[in-house]
Image (tube, rainbow, N blue to C red; front, side, top):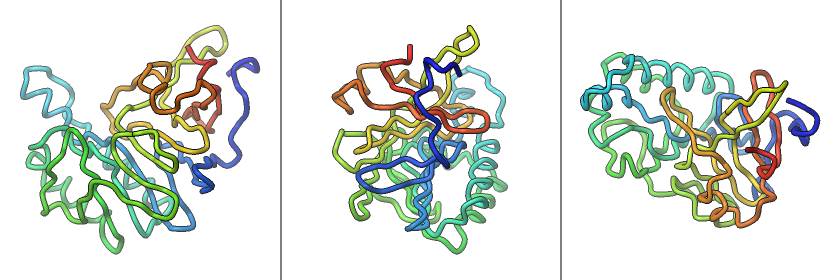
Length: 232
């Protein structure tokens, strides 16, 4: 990324939200080390099978790929608590289409730790047989975790799938990103088949209410901080 675009490289991938420092993992997860809490958003498990049922054929490997990435980030941080920040499943029946091996992989990740499913707009009525507990939101200290962002101070949300379009070496590229202004953050989608919404979309202006918020862009080997106003 060129010097006129990059404002700074975030040291150790750290984001500050309402006075709390969180490690921004290049997978798109957040880790709150003090609480040993890992947050992921918008897994959209079984999106491929949902599309297939409507005649749109996609390779049926998205759930396996997403769960493998999730297992890797859990192994990396060994959290005490995992919060899945809504839209963990692509539709209301997606959990029923999980294969036996996918269920076993999920159970293995949940072992010996607390697991919280936040209800999303795609999966508003999560069943009780998935392990863990279901909640509409979770508040810990100054931070509140929910699926759809409201713009509240201390809020960490998902739903919008933020991405940033930047120009580097004469060509444009789009990457997933965290959107954050120091008081609130919107997380990138974690799922293998999830798309993204440009952080220049007015949906983000309604959340941050100022163009001075930042896009923390997921690079190949590091996180880059770019002013949202500098993205196209």
